[in-house]
Length: 174
Image 1 (cartoon, rainbow, N blue to C red):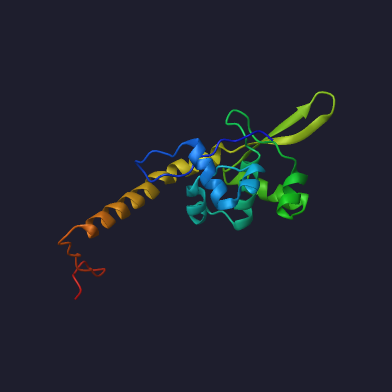
Image 2: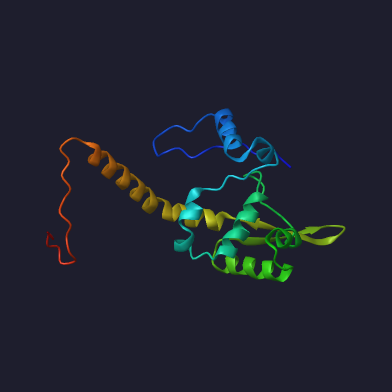
């Protein structure tokens, strides 16, 4: 398995910790031996936006499994359906259906691979559709994070007075 570099999320506008510190932090959380077996970097936005993206728990699990096989940005993942099925405790056919649904929704694009002497081999999976969907949602989620940060900062100031709550008609309530 190819070694994957690891980075931890930092609040917007703050620098990411060094690779060494991030790796140590992950080992502190999960255990060194667990982390030595490998890890996969997935943006938190994928989890936070699951509902907005319309992903079922199983579809999300399939995407996460595909991401676990994506070791290099320049090379798309190409796991066998049987490997995905074993990991997910699904049948090959169920995995095939979920991938077809993800493809129809624009998250994944299957690319057929063939070996000259063996014929068809495992598909390659292009996740650029998922990436594009996350990039479209990112500004909304970022705005909420920044608004929340600004409200927390305002509350911490001396003399802060909350604005009165308003009703749907826009009038203040007491």
